[in-house]
Image (tube, rainbow, N blue to C red; front, side):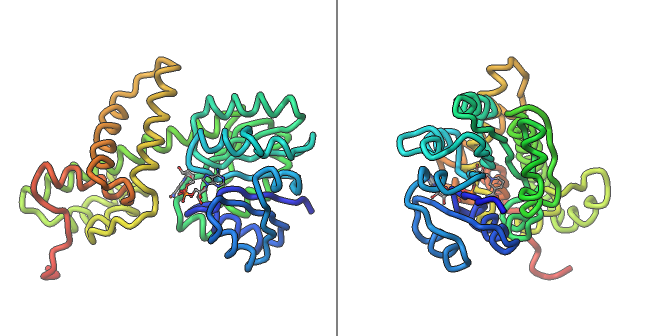
Length: 300
Ligand code: NAD
């Protein structure tokens, strides 16, 4: 069995690593925060001293970090994973980052004989815990085939999208659709609330029709409860939409709604709501309209 390294044990990485341990894999883990490392050591993982130390002990290195700068630092930086990787090692970066950065990192690793997949995920913390994430991977097909079963421990669907960077391109597409879905439901439900109509009844009335969606099912109950504990933080969605705009600029692709979305997310972050769940996008509309989209307490 191959030795697996796991770097970045946050909201997503910690339960994903936990599932690999439960599936019987040998894991070496590292995070700059000691708490999740200690927790995973209690579950059977080995703690490493640095990212380089993880790479020295691993055939496959997984990373689940916030954004492009952290992945560059962890993989290519001083004492980075690249220093400990041998030819034949595989890097699977599962963070959501700029797809063009995935390509750049992969090029640098190639010189060391190290192959890379970009394999970001969708589904959030509950699916990370259940091992039912949607995983979208880019990179060489033969490497994907080699590690598919490992990804399958963490995901219910594991799709090879194409060349390196295409996993993160799929993830950017995912993030545009999710953010705009939440903004659309916020706009619609604030309108309904302003009209004096119960938003919970509107939800019940429309969820089975064409407006129904996984995003509506996941976020509407939380919005109705005013429950914005993350989950997926607004600041991370802001990062993803910034990556959308950066990538679109380089490709000359039109992203009209994402530009508007960027303004909304930035304004929420500036108001100190960056750590709220992205369901909290509704608060932008609520503030403008002076109403709150909440359950009626009389039960009728
Ligand atoms: P998080 O902030 O909870 O976790 C990131 C972890 O990386 C932290 O534990 C942090 O200490 C660690 N870290 C940062 N710099 C490091 C370094 N230099 N060396 C070692 N460890 C370092 O973030 P998260 O919510 O787990 O998200 C991780 C990635 O997954 C992001 O790219 C995010 O966009 C993506 N994602 C998140 C969700 C979600 O619902 N939270 C869903 C899908 C995708």
